[in-house]
Every structure is written in C-alpha cells, then in structure tokens.
Image: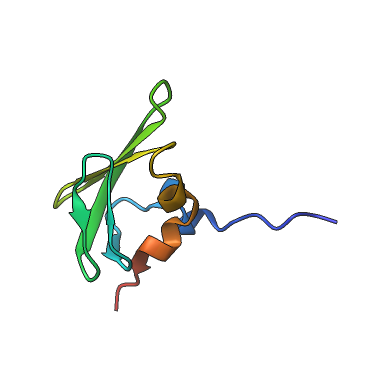
Length: 88
C-alpha cells in the first residue's frame, strides 16, 4: 500500500514563478511582517538556508521569511495560509 504524498503545488516548494497567490489566513513571518487575508502576491523565487532552516519566498511585492522551527505550523499547513489564484 502506498502512502499518499502531498500535492507539491500546495506547499512552499511548489510555488510557480510568475504565479499569483492570495493570503487566506493572517500570519506573521520570522521578521514579524504581517500577511493579511486578501493580499495578492506574484511569486518570483525561493531561497533556502539549510544552516538556519530559513525559507525566503520572494514575491514581486515583497518577501516572506519562514524559519523551520518558529513557523513550522505555517510551513506544514502552507496551503491553508496561501492559495494559488488560477488565471481566468
């Protein structure tokens, strides 16, 4: 029996460059930047610092910093906080 794998597009690892994303639930990143529901961001790229366990998500509008120990709940449930907007 195979174990179902999470959809990579619903994680921070599956963000698509040029894709539009909407903040669904409010949260603060590692640097206490507030991300409010309804905010729209266009994804550019992701950086990872293994020593620090830090993910930098670069959007055209601004950056988001998630640290694996402090923001684990956001990283693990990323699709509950950030959702892709399908182009119409």
